[in-house]
Length: 370
Ligand SMILES: NC(=O)c1ccc[n+]([C@@H]2O[C@H](COP(=O)([O-])OP(=O)(O)OC[C@H]3O[C@@H](n4cnc5c(N)ncnc54)[C@H](O)[C@@H]3O)[C@@H](O)[C@H]2O)c1
Image (tube, rainbow, N blue to C red; front, side, top):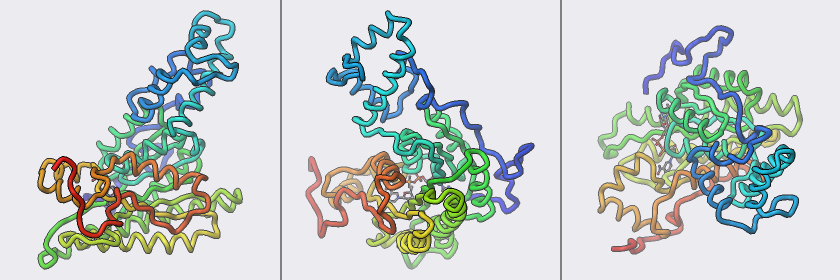
């Protein structure tokens, strides 16, 4: 964690006093281009959502284009009848949207702008990907400069309109710059995923004040700072165009209400996130801003990869997971996209737990295959 009080982590560029992203937004979102043509899917790279949609496109012949043709004959038409090219391209684009709907890849967030903190990898990256594939422009904000550049390159390859910004969420001036830069670049801020988080482990009796503070600064103060800066912008937007508030999603954990004895700061920070979420929801409801939390159980990110390589440790995790597996980051990203969308328009002040059944479980379950 190497924040810089002078703000030099957000380097100045001519004409942009607020700092600059690490990579500039790409010229266009292929999703929104007018004529994708027959190479529709080959333009898209290997995002898991598009792999899924592509498979559906290739294998399901029940799918019909608006003129009633099956997709394969429509493709042949497309290659042979040049004068119908434009119209068919449009029909295919409509068709793609339907395939995406079937695949659960709707465009619920088309035209929205989101910041995802800690978006360089893990759950944050999955949130950025899920939001982006639903049509949202995404700013990946992370303390890891190279990581966020890599993340944004991958998102852009998949057709997501994304940009990277270096930001330490525990530093107010960097957070304020991040929000200002996002609004300057994309014109608004509709969604915040306050996801950045760290964990430091030690026996309770040995935990240092420094480690406790470090975790609270990122996991709890960071959620407060980013939430406040984002909400101030959303309040203004709601004044300018009534009804356009926003959605804030705070990344909590099952450890907000359960505890692991060796991570006191983490447990405390996530408990704080839950009640901060409720407080924000109440304060911001009148401004059309919804605030919710997500409480993941064990999700396969780098943190858990270390556990996964230790069979007995993994068995302990699975013995507390009725679904018999750990979660995929995309399973959290999908919840973030839902909570950010109008599908969740009457949900605020809630924490949604995605934990494979852990919190419902007293005692243990048999481990699959053991
Ligand atoms: N993985 C799990 O099993 C799990 C379970 C419950 C909750 N969570 C929560 O989900 C969130 C993401 O977890 P993850 O497993 O993807 O972690 P991760 O370590 O894979 O990713 C965390 C990201 O946050 C960034 N980050 C760290 N400090 C930052 C700061 N000060 N400012 C900006 N960015 C910073 C890191 O650079 C990294 O890119 C965390 O809040 C975590 O507590 C994770």
